[in-house]
Image (cartoon, rainbow, N blue to C red; front, side, top):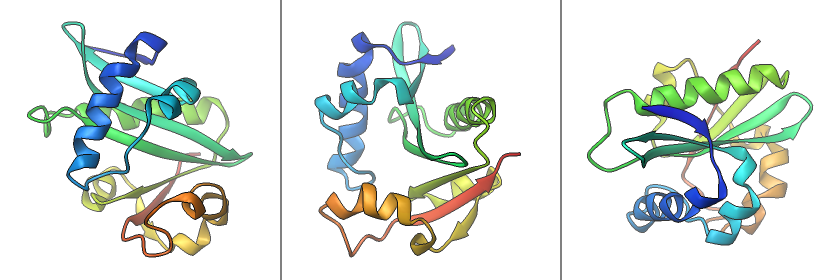
Length: 151
């Protein structure tokens, strides 16, 4: 098993993984174009040459970043891969001197186990006015917002 920064040849597998869960309403879809444009935000976890999970760290400001697009391949859940991705991303955030990571999710209990706390989405105007405003679920989003201080 290897956790590493994503590279361009990973995009097709990333696209399939993300959009599998998006088709079930469990996360927002991502276009190939969005994955290519944001490839530097992503990390992947692979085993035997196959991507089994991914996640992204998207920086918003000098002290704030979002952990987004966290997914583990169907059938590979509950084996610690998601936790490993979050830990890898948190380490990367610390290296960048990010102070707070937030996430929007339908799986708040997973993040609570990793030290995240539920917060009001309205406390994240950077996210709302950058990304959420363009989302088809806006303003009726039912994702839960959580954050963790990492310093």
